[in-house]
Image (cartoon, rainbow, N blue to C red; front, side):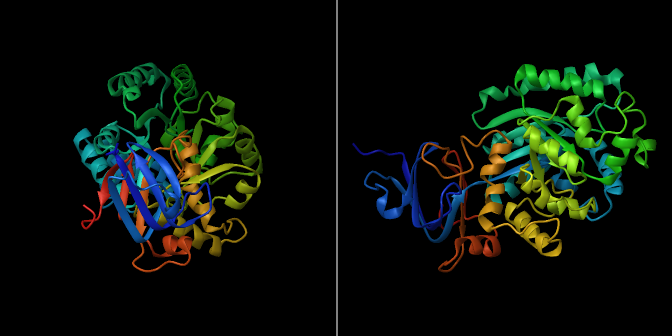
Length: 422
Ligand SMILES: [Zn+2]
């Protein structure tokens, strides 16, 4: 009997990520799953009902962008992206305070379109209002939505925690096969130790993952470690009950936050002891080099972190601090950074960079069993980039030639296809 739901995608090159590149490769998709991956000639094609061929295309698992702020998409024109972190943060606070839920939803919808355009099929989204959860759900993108939690005063903690719990009740993430909800205690300097511990209890009880901005700027380090610097006037007594003398990373460790299920974003201002803790605790770090450069917070010691065994993946951050949500743009910038700062920043081979925006980023979100590589049994999350010519080196063609995806597919469903395909 003929099977009607088998789709064959054939491309000049396949980059499975978990295996070497395959020239003239094909992927067979049934429903939401990959049922075969390999050389075109070795894939059974008799029962295929839909055939998509990309002779000049590079086909790979859809990108996983593990840190975005989709609700900030429309701030892009309202904020200067290239300025010192403290000034930027003050401007952000003003913008955020005047943003309505509808504004945030419109922004998130636009952000989702950007992701799909660049072949991103899965995100780690940091959501202030929950609007991006709705936008992602509607668009049928995959991801983990970390609900932002800020608490500057212990007396507010219980009420805010109630609000957080109510949000989880309303979104009912367990009913969605593509989206998970998780917790985003914003940063060591925006949540009191008491509130942090209460959030942790909730996370443990509900088995929720965590995402936290950490060790991003020198201002943060000075404030958390010594309660000094200009942030003292702004943040006042948030850390009144926290021990003095701990770096942001060691303070988070003191709170008991650092676990393999935790994703830390940035980790630029880290010393050797911090790096040892990050490696020991097996936490994931989302590295955002373009955002760090724009906000002038320093260069992450990536070479040392990788050599000490820290789990690092690559993310774009939101459009309030970078000019695209393209993981390929992020890699291009990282490669440039490696040329400029060879002592602190490594020159990695292209397949390693790509792994940081696919399989490693998926692992950082706890999704590597399902996505991040082209493997039989995994979800059919796929991106295709066309090159317009015959390709000798698929890595080079992708990293230095490709712009927008020709096809973006999540769970076997096409979200973007160039006109000739549709
Ligand atoms: Zn962020």
